[in-house]
Length: 231
Length: 65
Image (tube, rainbow over all chains, first blue to last red; front, side, top):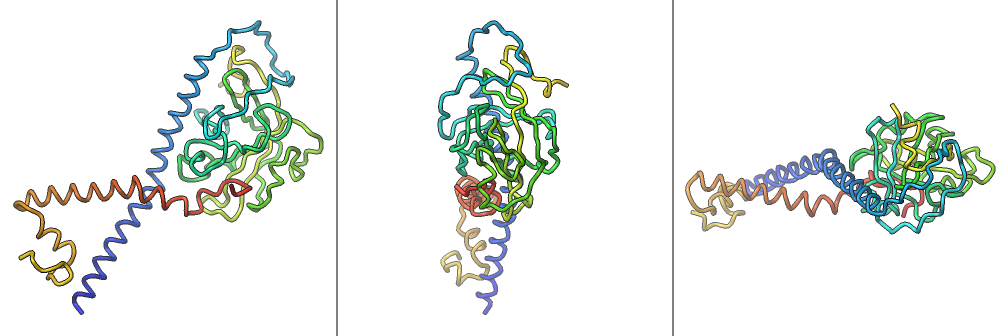
């Protein structure tokens, strides 16, 4: 009898400690790791861009110009290819965007749905990100409003998207939201769109939150930071 | 002392480990600490990364890939 009681109590203490440690891991440690990894990814990108720096062509300011930028090469799976800035989520908020939405990829940054359009191209450039854990990139997702800027750069061009439809709650099987012309967004004609997805509720997985944006302007990096990122 | 298996001993698994550590109390405490650190390392490095994707926080996409 004593042996049973003692064994059970030791087991409880052990399991309890492991659970507490696991909570610490999920809430705290994944964030520490993700911040580290995301910084690495951004550094990797900037090194890449510095190496292949395009000689500044006649940098005629093309602000407000929505002409098609050159079609980028296919993105390498699991590799970063752009940096996203959303001033509404914080002035210093910037995250790498990686190709693909695999679990391992989303630990390193935001994930671009592989089958959707490329950055700045016709169609829908769709990106998923963690709401909680792994650095909480989309923690303040519900604060996004119509008119907010979502700025991306691929090293040669700044893309400024403007949000048209604020956080829209849907179910996880609603894959139409990342269609080239997402019907529920109110867009009716084909264009250059951006879709962001994350989970809802904050710690759950029963729903998804979506925002849609359209490409507002592009400018070459030599022309400096776009309007939306200037303080 | 220390010859009885932990489930027969007077003070359980942790007591059994303690009695099997060499050295005096200080050395035992130091080794225990190292053991705890090793266990936490294994958990954080291998066990939790495996277990974490089973929780719902990873479902952020709409096509479940």
